[in-house]
Amino acid sequence: MPIYLDYNATAPMRPEVRDLVIRVMEGVGNGSSVHAYGRAARKYIEDARAQVADLCVATPEQVTFTSGATESINTVLHHFRGKRILVSSIEHPAVLQSAPDSEQIPVTTNGVIDLNALEALLKAEPTALVCVMLVNSETGVIQPVAEAAQLAHDHGALLFVDAVQAAGRINISLNKLGADYMALSAHKMAGPQGVGALITKSGLETPRFMLGGGQEKNCRAGTHNTAGIAGMGLAAQIAKDSITHYDETITKMRDDMEEKIRALTNGIKIYGDHMPRVGNTSNIGLHGVPAQTQMMALDLDGIAVSSGSACSSGSFKPSHVLTAMGADESEAKSALRISMGWNTTQHDIDTFLNSYTKIIKRTQA
Image (tube, rainbow, N blue to C red; front, side, top):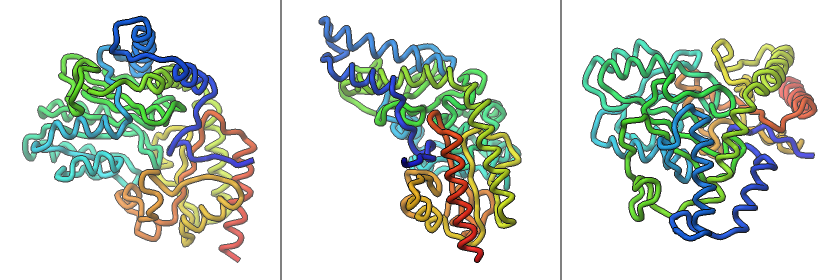
């Protein structure tokens, strides 16, 4: 039976979410229509809006549905084009490439943004927007977003937060974080692919990016992906209810796994392990063994892991996250990301450990 340990790339859809998506797809109706079919579709959309709002302690009016976090990110950053933008050096490529002229906020060797450096950048000249992710997708390190928000606001800037990897793993509150904009993705929390949301602070105008019809309060044109949105809503509800499971079960499996891996050889480095992390993620460097070699060996044993952000892992370039943390090219190319989720079992981890042990023995023979 194949073993999937790449939840940070995409999480398997929960059965109850899949059932809802299929049920909605079997119906018909455009949420913009006023007849009964349209009203039925609209109810799915608005129910989901309330569920997504509840996940991040917002109101339904603050939620705008998109095709995914990448669109949400592009929507906000396009709105600030031509203005000074600061982004952390470990942001997802969707942020880094959407703001090519931005200035980067460095991180420490532990993978946490340098707040002193951020303050210095903010003092240097007026800034319109600061971008800091809540949880890094490669290391799982939780970023000090609330502190960054305070600094940004003190200097007249707004804060954008990529919260994709945080949903269902830690509690999220738009207001407590001090975020002005927040991006979410359905498929990272066991919902369907191709749907996401942009959450906007109350009182701020939601940027317009997709033009056409009047959907989403005239903020995001295009016929609603009703089935996907409904699935995202249910996934968000389950994700919020599952945080305790991550704290009590997933984190223990991860910590036990890391302890056993450390005991195998002295050539192991676990990135970000001294900082608060979400409980499902482990980024493990095996000195001198390229991640590509490790991944191929694990894949032959039916185990799926990755070497970094899924959107760029196929290139096998050094991880920009790890290099920002001070890793050299060889180190950055030798790290694997293991990410667990709702369907991960102890048997999965034990099987991975057996395969990983074989890799170490072969490479050190």
